[in-house]
Amino acid sequence: MVHTSAQVEKRTAQYIPGACNIGRDEIRVRALTGLAGLFITAILLIILLIVHASPVIRVIVFIPAFISALGFLQAYFHFCAYFCLRSLFNFEKAGTTPEEIWDDNMRRLDRRRAWTIIAYAALVAAGVTLVAFIIPF
Image (cartoon, rainbow, N blue to C red; front, side, top):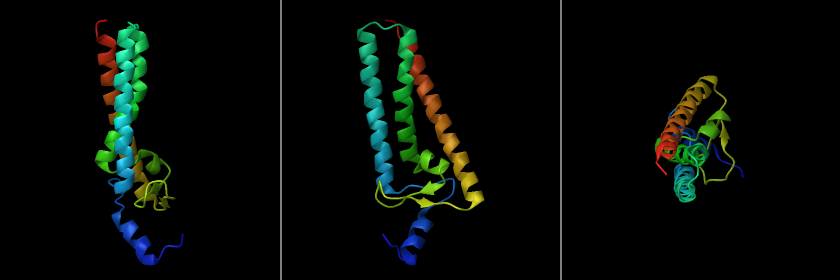
C-alpha cells in the first residue's frame, strides 16, 4: 500500500516517544489479550484448587497472569512493549505492517517505557502467584 506524505505525517504525529506507540485498534487487541489472560488465570487457578494441587504447582498461574497484566497495561498506557523493543509503532488497523522508528533518542525513550510496563506486569503476576501459592487447600 502506498501512503501519501500527509498520511505518514498524521501517523507520525500520533506517535509520542515513550508514551504512545499504538492506535485504537491495537489498544483493543491488547485489552482483549488482557481479558483472555485473566480468564485463563482464573480457570487454571480454579482447576488447580479443585484437584488440590500443591502450592508449588500453583505457581504456574504466573504465566497467564503475566500475559493478562501485560495486555491490560499496554492497553492502559497505549503502548506496546513488543513494538517498542522492535522500534516500531502502529496507528493503522491491527495486523497491518507497523512503521519503523529510526531516531535513537525516541528508541531509548520507548525502551525505557517498555521495560517499565514489563516490570509492572511481572509485579502484578507475582502478586497473583503469591495469592495462588498461599491459598489454603
